[in-house]
Length: 296
Image (cartoon, rainbow, N blue to C red):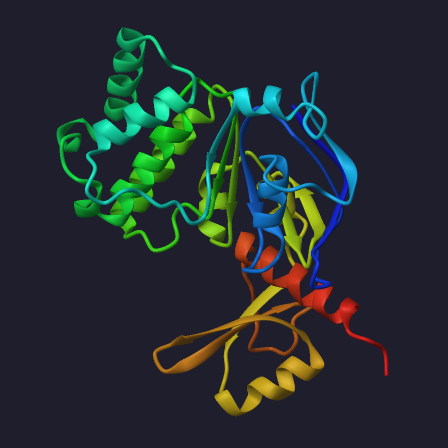
């Protein structure tokens, strides 16, 4: 169990990245959902001991993360949002180099670990190729391979599927799900579907604050019978937004389909629809934005 208790962080330029964040994260795949700039990467860097918080505490089992950084680093695998590689080095050679840095100094053990990870991430056939020739999905799978060196018990992946095509995204998410059967895996993302499809537990963060936490199913169930949809004219959108809690609009056949959060149908055109996690996401963002606006 990873326990984060009232962690706050303000950068030197005055940006309050984290505001008393508290979360309990069990073994398995945990989704940390939020828009760009919400504070997800700041929280991931803090857990990974790459920066100090201003206040609060983090524990992983019996380890005090902020006081015993060496202990947590031995348990940690980390794939940051911007993961660079040496483009003229092969995957096999660079993974071997990372394995040495992780403390795998016995050559036979290191070779076995590198081979197993290249097989697990489906990169064995391309192990001799230069990393500069890899697709985006292949580079991300290589990033996971290096994160899994040393058999970590805590794995952090920050925005791993951004920019991947659907096939590579599915392959990568299936790999994460497999890893999450054994260890704590934190998936930080702004892509709602990644959390819906894979994560038994989740939290949503915005402007450095936790807006909700729980299971995706429970978060969705709380909106049941309160989400309505109708095809409307573009000219009506402004009035609908001013009179109701507009969740989202999407063009279908050239006309907007508006989704509204309400205890009853806004007008006879609107029909109740089954909510999804995207509705939860937009509702919490709209409510938080409204609460954060200064009063007139």
